[in-house]
Image (tube, rainbow, N blue to C red):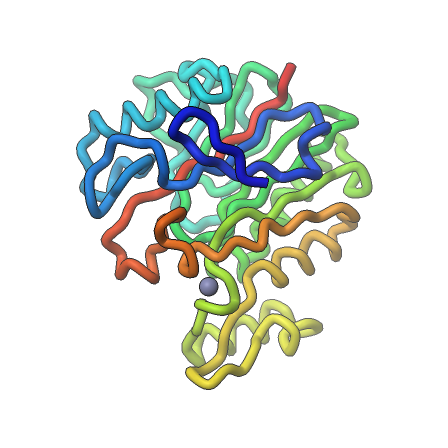
Amino acid sequence: MLIDRDSLRYFCFDSLMDAGVVQAIYSRHGGVSKVPFAALNTGGTVGDDPRAVAENRRRIFTSLDRPLSSIFDVWQVHSVNVAIATAPRPVDQPHQQADIILTNKPGVTLFMRFADCVPVFLVDSKRKVIGLVHAGWIGTLNHAVSIGLKAMQDQFGSKPGDILAGIGPSIGVCHYCVGDDVAARVEKAFPEVSTEILVKREDGIHFDLWKANQFELEAGGVRQIEIAGLCTACNITDWYSHRAESGKTGRFGALIALSG
Ligand SMILES: [Zn+2]
């Protein structure tokens, strides 16, 4: 559901409301950044004023009563590297290059930035472990979500049947036309379901990132999956879309934390 609080608007997964977590994916409303980053841009490397980015981040954390000092964020590089957050990231330390972050510490707030790529939330409410995955087309083809699930099992003893998952606002199949090279890679990475996740349209082949990640989660044993169903490229007044705005745009923030 979409929630309006002060001037901010953010999406929360209904299925994670009672899971003992604080979770939100922020729309672009309610920040201080100027066009083309207007308004709640959290991306520090897109050309926006760093003071605006800092103020936006402060507003986001304040809206959910999470201390800014609890942040654990990473340098997202379309990898399948896993970072285990045992403590918040000290401000004077560089970001780790990773696209999967896990923690079991209530004092840590996992944070990532998006503009079309798929945010995936993972919550093991039994063992109190959470994960945040950055799954763009490259991460999806490299099975980032499966690697995140496996790391939850290996590092924290999570059982897939106890894990709840949410697939957040990102580019939908409606707007995600891909070239033959990418389509061929999808076929190779998802041989059993490629006919379901590659859809022929008038303008070419479209890749359904939501379905691909849903398949990945189901294959990994996750039974409860919620898909936000919000296409960023369909809704550029609400969301940043790298593709629909030809790269001149910001990044919206996604955060998740154990509520302690
Ligand atoms: Zn769309």
